[in-house]
Image 1 (cartoon, helix red, strand yellow):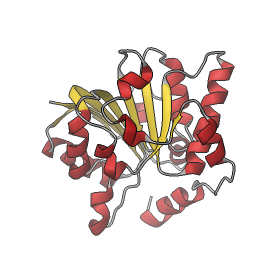
Image 2: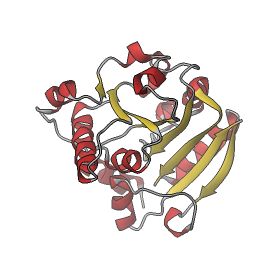
Image 3: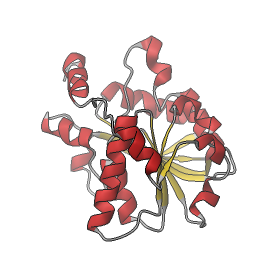
Image 4: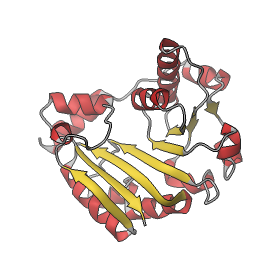
Length: 231
């Protein structure tokens, strides 16, 4: 699929301003409005020694709500930049947990610029896994440093991802995927597994489809995925 059509598809799922989002987030027990205060202290926030997994760019929360509610022995932090997205993520999490009749105790949402993530994470946080799902491909050369999988970002993640920690990455974009495989190798990550057609790769991982993933699959676009490990 050409770039224009793909970008048009991305535009169609952008979210409108939600006037209720900010107040609901501020009132939520699992939203953190001051993540800088928790740098090096995320484990104390959860009050347990369970592994911590991080989703970068959680969007409307369809992925994190399902993942976290299925794995109560893992702690999750989900980050996005947009209040409207986080507001919808908060509602999705509440809905999924309510359906299962369990309290929301193992996931926190926060608003922050991922390019400045070292202001809220350090090496004592020892994150076990990072999820990056359908991030902006930034196809133009001068913008590629903005990619969440670019080498300069991966170097930042290495500061707080523990040795042997993993990154799970999914995208619809061929160029981003191939470039990211190079980025991973250049920054000392081992590519454990990769696929250019996730839907037809059995047992790749326990996949949870995102909203973007469903949309692209309906358009006939194959989903690319990689699992990498910090050496």
